[in-house]
Image (cartoon, helix red, strand yellow):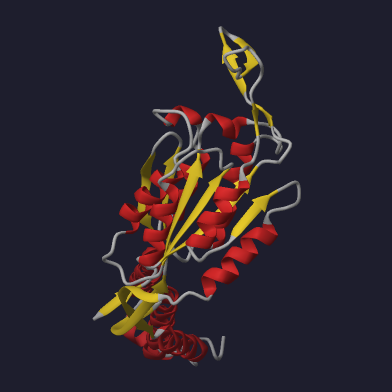
Length: 329
């Protein structure tokens, strides 16, 4: 089938039509003028070096040449060329801790903002994979299902805040369970979970969930956010800024708890990394390199119809006609 890839250029076909109309009107006016002087046929025959027939042919060739150049500009295409594109990918879930302890400022500007920036950078690095998002605090819930829409993932990570969590605390076991639901067991692609947290939890279910997920083929990465020295947790009390306090009125110091995060990564046959004061590119690179060793499966297939362009023929014919029409002008 014929089609033009740039149909908006076809409006330029009005130009040769208008030029042809102007030429026809001028010729009619010329013949009327000659008829007043005498026989139009006799006067025309007396004009040396003038051939009305040749003139009409040249004008027709020029107008046709211009029309062909316009058609070439619109890029005429014919037929279709089926092309199959196969995507090989794996499934990745980013589990982001949004508990109150993530507001501690021992990692500038605070743990949560640093974790969100890291998660967005990691998602950008893994944008060729299918990704989902899980938010966790006292419990965990799927926030974004598996998708190839990188913009949706980035927006979900950017807008995450503690107010989205219905309860306090950090439930790493719940995060693994929620990620298992997001990843499902239908896709043949490899499954990866990246937990970004300060590790402040007493979740006794984390070990069982991590080992069960690893047994089902999930690879678990953990990323610790915070420092051993820790920091206080800013809160708003009665309209004024303060720090979270214990029952004795003392400010609560939140510290990065690495042992459980290390164990989850070990049980899940992945890696543990820590976000410190240095740049995060090294951590992202190491996770990317590890993921690249996992076996990717054919996840999706698209069928495209690629049309063949024939503008070159119209371009060459148009130029030849214009060259012939104006060769003696």
